[in-house]
Image (cartoon, rainbow over the protein chains, first blue to last red):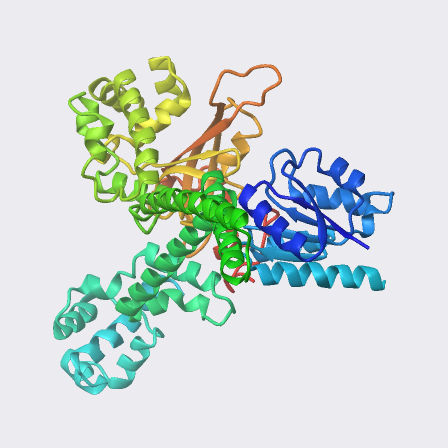
Length: 127
Length: 435
């Protein structure tokens, strides 16, 4: 069964690299680069996992994460890997309070991203 | 312990510096060693001929033994104790410490000032890192580009057989990102370089401005006669080391020049001689607002005023915008002031003049007449709250006149104020006196 991820990121070359890695690993990947309608994209795609940048045009990744956790249509349990250039403790704490599944600061390694994606998916399918 | 009672400590200190035994000094001035011992432990008062004789033997001026350490030094020592992580210092003996070990006291006070300055700098830079949109955007740009390069380069390096089409695409992406990274890094370095050229005391511009004004005794002849401009004065002013302090000084000096043009020195001096220090009479005579009179009085040379004058300007948050210290009225260098100052009462009744006789309690009790007013900085408009500023003129009251009217006790700031039962207290005092 195909595993499906939605990547919300506004950096085109990061999108391209992560899409390549995930596709090679057997994932189907939807990408989107604007925060404003990210919830609609996620809801429509119904993915197994979301990779979410924090600083996005239109709406911050943190706000999108909060909306996901408050959603009543099953999105509240969706694993979310958050990517950010802001790696301060309080940013991490804020993300954890908002319900992030994994928090990763840029610049990350490909291996870190892939390990996180696989771990989160494995945890989600086991529960 | 009051300053004047510490003469004995200073005698002991000077004697030890001179390498004299107690018995030697006592013999030289014709008293017993046990009596000198009582004097040195501040258990006997000393003055007159005996003091002069001791000073002569010790090779110092008598005033060196009778005058205490500077009040500012003691105040700074108390601030240092207040800010200590644990209440270990003998805060009630700050004056004795300053009197006996003036050099060490200066070292400690200097270290405290430097720590406070550096803390401000750290706080300012931390705030900038958190809130400066330009810096945040620059860092985000650099890190995002670095992430893209790292990820793409790893794919090229680690993926065994990569299709030529993907290879070309990723090479092109790396090239694009490398160029972006070079540009954003250069922009970031330029931004930080500009910050580094600022003086290390960045974040305390008011302190630099006060130093600059103090060096000029708060009076600028070239602005009085119009022969100079604020920028002339700022250029080459060593005290104004940071861009922020130069900006603050420019505002204050421009205001000074406007006030001087409105109330020329010669005419204002003449009126001052006639009206004495009556701000309201002067405001009526010149047809201007009280705050202008306050500022103008603070800009007068002491020879014209005939008395010391202090001035504090603040905004409605209580933050000090400008201050001219006056002896024995302690103005905190850092942190919040006493909320009982008439200056803050003025904010509850803008444009209403307030006069209060106050006594500042602390090491000594001094009495002052304070005149305060608050005013909107801009024309009030519907649907927009004006920004208010306040000014307080501080005039010392002569000792013989101090009892003529009741004085409201006020402090400097809570941590160094000894009034335990103060209704305005925000936090405990470090001082044990009166507790």
